[in-house]
Length: 611
Image (cartoon, rainbow, N blue to C red; front, side):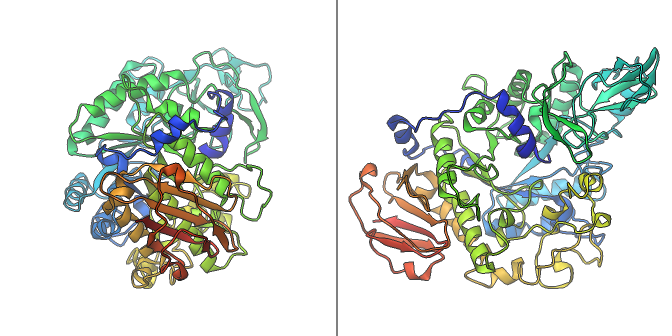
């Protein structure tokens, strides 16, 4: 969901557990450096998010579909993907492109049928790929039969399946959002704002009441204080588990409950793109009841065989707050809450160079270290790209950098994603360096946020353009001359076909990294130990070796100038200085055999085995 990182996480700082500010203790560092013996699949997984309407169109209507995904499973298997996360493909009016669901137990006809889904699932299994579904539990579409019934009267069987309120009286019939109720003019009960602009309350004449919506007005929030709602949603979860899905990515899961007192929230002091005062969402997200709900949901999922699992869309202000979403040993919650601090969160860290504020070694060192030492041994899930944020190619580079520099930076990001100890979540097209193509005219915008918020808010179309497969018309995405969003203008150079034939391409780099991650025992099971901790320009870490394997060094020059490193491996009890290069984008390093005074060219990634 849009800008939960930028808006919601910042607001929740007020309610978050205090962040640990001391360095990791020797015991914490030693624990992180220990190799793993846990073979649970998701602890080592590479999860690939697919936005169905943008991946592959099989029937020529200009919109991607399930059969198109099935056609491309050989590509995904070759890339090394363990699981696909499918963005919503349920029936939907498509106000929020599937995140407004009108039926949780079916497939939207534009994407195919249940038979097509079952075929995708069965074929994916043959390619050793699991399927994870996006489950949107906070809200439904206003066209869902549940809401239509709930909105029809105050006495129907589903009258309290959503959050309704009479509003508060006002003498000013011209007040913002004022409506004539049964007993006079009323306005919304509080100042809560929608994350998607405007008031979070919408009037319905048939009930003479307001309903609450954290997101679009067409996405009314479900009332989870009604046990019947939880039962209905758990039934939907079981429907897909019975079909064989590996688990769920839970959309906006922190927003399930709201403070029943309906007190005003503090304001941020900012106006949203529509000019409405923003509230800080401390009474509408992250409430304790969400944890209780997740424990019950986890029990449902864990009752199925095959290591089913839950990924959570979690944006937190710090690592300490992230820890709480794993639950406890006695009451587990999420297997993999998304750690977006590394990939999306911006901090200064005392760095004054503003030319590239996010590609900073100290930033990466901080959040990788915290993920390994402050999550009590839980597996972090790192993510740099998704359907709600501009692509990492654009966020970690600057317009003044050359294509070659940007590609080298993209290789650094991929190296961090696939060579740390974390599970990895990537997004279609990141492996080839797809860029953000933000519309330049309001009339071209498809995302409602951009339509209503233009020009301050231009929406999310830019990161959702169709997958770039080849140099042919429509880049091989669709046989149609018109696609739901335009193909990126750079498709002639950034595409799967071209990069597959180039041994130095970003795609081949990603393939090599994932293969190394899967096949090398140290990359698969080794612990992690930070080295050269005060270096402001180079990020270096060691993957410690399980029995019978060799340690692996990963070092990344995050600057545009050469950097010479002097490494001391005594903290890892390693005396050898002999190395064997495994992977680098700097040809000059391919013959390096010793640790002594390694000079890394600009934006170099270097991975070597210590012999």
